[in-house]
Image (cartoon, rainbow, N blue to C red; front, side, top):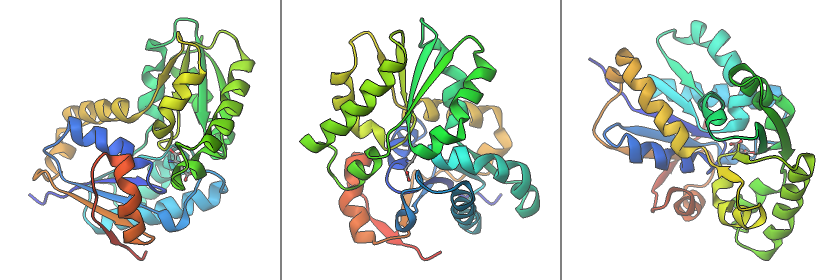
Length: 273
Ligand code: DGL
């Protein structure tokens, strides 16, 4: 049987925070990571543009043989996933699967909140798509969702300024603005795969009883469940424990930045789409 790696996609580096957790949970599989760094950030782009870029990258994964692609990017999951699943896969190859990061998170978020008041911190694109309120409503109709777009956070992270005093100003501004929407928020989701790098700063700014969740482990657990339930897909994924990294921008830049997201050094290859 022809077995191939699982594809993991992000607009840039953020998906590496998800890949790290996926590899920790499912170390035996092979993975191909693609960061579309040349065109990131996606968070400020239109639906059409994010869809077009994401589809192009997904098709590249298919040319590499990947039977399953994870959009480890909330913006791409919010703006492109549904159309790809509902329209494009049937046309391109119905045997392929593309999954995102929003569904796994919204499915379980209710387990964490006692007050039923949940805050979402995300890119402008994810907030504008309303994907989180819509999806959470399906699973937990009693939960009220409050959203805050944090347009400066991805540039701070991508430019290695996430630990700087300048970052404090923007992080505090958005956290305050979210918490002002309801004094009862007891769970905050970092609904952007770049934001786990800001976790320490965020935790200092929220009351102690507020739980701050990032998505990596949640997505990894959900993928593990998915592969158990879909043996046909699991069997079409290769298992040599290998990972290949690709970026649409400079491989040297990627390698210099990627370690802080992935937790260890990375050697990538430049890709022209
Ligand atoms: N990492 C992406 C996400 O999870 C956002 C980064 C971007 O704006 O490109 O939404």
